[in-house]
Image 1 (tube, rainbow, N blue to C red):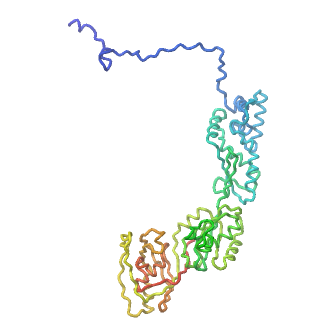
Image 2 (image 1 turned 90 degrees about the vertical axis):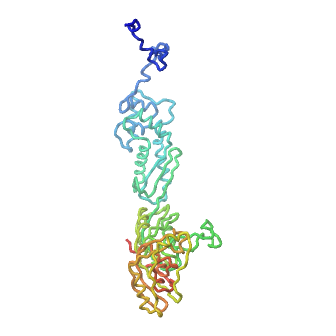
Image 3 (image 1 turned 30 degrees about the horizontal axis):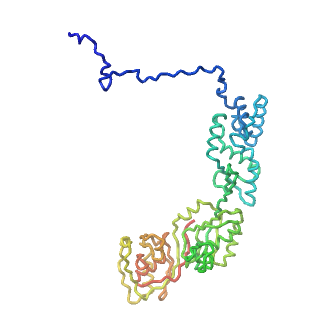
Length: 488
């Protein structure tokens, strides 16, 4: 073997990516700087961990940093109730004083609550003053704290309080609730569905009392035509404050409504600011609502009074409406029932009287953007009218509509506020058909959402089938009454 083979190869020549220089494993080391000698006079005890409460050491520390009696109690790790919190805190403070713990001279207020608990008696008096003159039995309280205060207290409590100590916000609400229970003996403090909500801004001590709405359920009968169900803003001034000449400065298109006939006497009785009316459907202005009446829920906003004899209030409404509206079945309700009232698809019974003839029924030619939907309406077989209409024929044609499913394109009279589409609705039954020369009357029960007037006159062919189509004659509604709303 040659001399070069006898010599061992140096592996470091191949240890770097460059192949031309060797890798030095010690190149990344940083020389350590010399440090000064440790100060032998430094007291390690200053940085020693203080054992948290319920140890005497932890309690003494709470006293020394200026913690109030209430916060000493809640951070002490000892069982307590809020009606005895101040006494417990004072007892702990006294024991700490005997052990030599004293509050620092530079401490101005409790570092945890910033003396909120100390000022709570003043706050309770302010709340009582705010609630004076308001009738209620269920109250909920809430407090708003600055985010910085909550964060700082959480950090302090974690470092200095016993494990599991109650947070400031929940502790404040519990303590305030305890004091209010003693002052307002007939009031129940609740977590949901209050009659009044009291909100306290802990930074400014501003108190807001929010009166929750009062709801009543009942049925109304509208005995006169020409009255809308709810307030109708003036078309000219859009209901602005002060109105205009067109509405006699009322802001309303019609001088009264079912809402006001029922709501105004009750609003005055409950000393509420305003009302909102929620009906199970609505009838047209020129339609009466008879029978048992239409279910409704009326809402009274910010009422100062909440409790009254509902039978007396029923008599009050019926006496002041001058025979235009009557109510019955009045009872207490709640907000959730509004959704039920609005969402119930109840069948309804009507009595309708109309003229027929002498002009023939004509389907108008329409060219609108919704013609594609109008094609969905199936064309009905044409019925040849006899040369002379007999009452028997008219009655037979009207009765033939019982059980059919109508295809109703949105009527022209409501097309400005309803989507233009075809709706399918069933005619459940037709009875009590009365036929006179040129006029007829019938009682009809229909599925919820049926346009009953259009069932008679067809709205120029937008509703099929219809009485006008069956007779082949123009039909004109004279009057319409709601006999019953089949719900509840």
